[in-house]
Length: 324
Image (cartoon, rainbow, N blue to C red; front, side):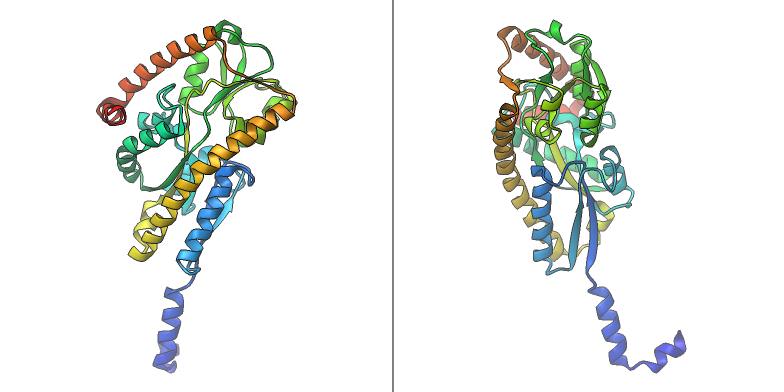
């Protein structure tokens, strides 16, 4: 090798070195949702923004529908450097820390405006928590409000007893317990198969996920209870982030700001489209009865108290900031 270098002109060595240092990077970004889902479309737009902003130095390849890593493996894959960046529903990791479930406290933030306020109240604590796990929060986009899918009329909590419901985070599991349903953990990409096999016969999710999963093939009622608005977060490995130049970090920050703003617009539009699709495919899209609404509100208050106890001082700070 020394002999080889000695035979190369100095200019050739410099050119080779420059070529290596400026080589384009390809990053893999797994997500758990279909390519057509608004969250994935938003991620594609973010990827293009980064490629344009870095003049092609960083190319982010989106891997939808759990094709690279299953949903529950994505956060760990980014954390350990198996992939540079990923998108994940952070509330699915509330068992690690209650703060990850801030966006799924029932009936606290049920509108897009309140979802944004709660996110900004929680963001400083979330950033510290993620940094301790070698992760950097890039951007976050809310899902539409969560509703209830059933294959029968449900006019009171008593009507929910014994129903097998898909659970995707601690909040859905706890809501199932408090309504005497049977929670079963299912990733988004597996919903259709689980319903067809009879593993589950109910969902607590958005109209958009219902549309993605063609729930009308198994279920026929959707109750618009607006329980909470969970958020997807795009996270990057902190070591990889620290290795970026300040200019490239600024590109990411600028593209992230655009992705958050555009993502909310996409979320609203996707919700309207999904509600129309449910109706067009024969589903009943209903407001809850006053009895069901009142009972769910009481359950939500219980869950909010439980969350506050688990979240401790950090959680109290988030709620105080949000309410002020």
